[in-house]
Length: 260
Ligand SMILES: O=C1O[C@H](COP(=O)(O)O)[C@@H](O)[C@H](O)[C@H]1O
Image (tube, protein in one colour):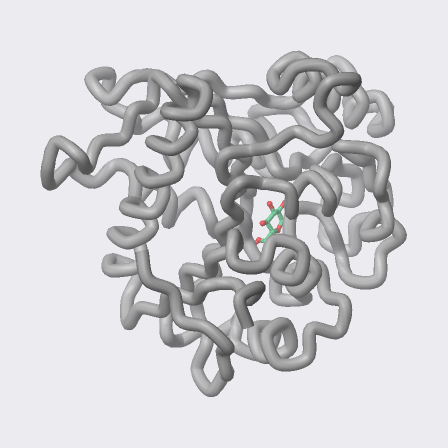
């Protein structure tokens, strides 16, 4: 049972956000100790709001410090739209979190997509992969980029990043970043980190909240059924943690409860 993901369940978002903060600070400090930076990939959807609640809370002790000036923020997936478009994951993170960071907390380095390639999603993905190559050293010396942390969402169909159930992209083994032109959830054109990159992270955390996630959580944890979130669980094992509210996991059986 040592390979199972961890589960942290809370009655309400406030408590979830507070434990998520502690977990992220542990990942941040480990990244800074390793390479003087915290390299984190972030999803869109419902995650940025909860993330803001976790990260913008006032510190409770000197150890409880977010060091944004050491953060390098990448996107776990992005939609092929301008950066100020309502569907943009960057725009969402900016309005929910980045614009609200007080100057004294430091300024993260943020790596959005290069929007000059919006008409060509293969090129958009290739350019984002090149950005990762530059940030994580060359592809020749690094087989896969190793994020200190990937912060992921879980869609009601079990998708994560822009990796959708049953899609051929789940079998991608070469690209670090892949294009998708037929996303079942709009908008159809997107780019996404590939599954090997996601499962290679030092730590991988999912945040899933609300009763709307209950059915899919049951499928992911009790059946697996090749769902993208279940594949991340299998690939990352105990390096993977789920932060959920009770509503999202009512009646779901879990092999392992987490502790920080
Ligand atoms: O389309 C997307 O959806 C997922 C899940 O979103 P949620 O609103 O159900 O949390 C998100 O993680 C991903 O980044 C986004 O592009």
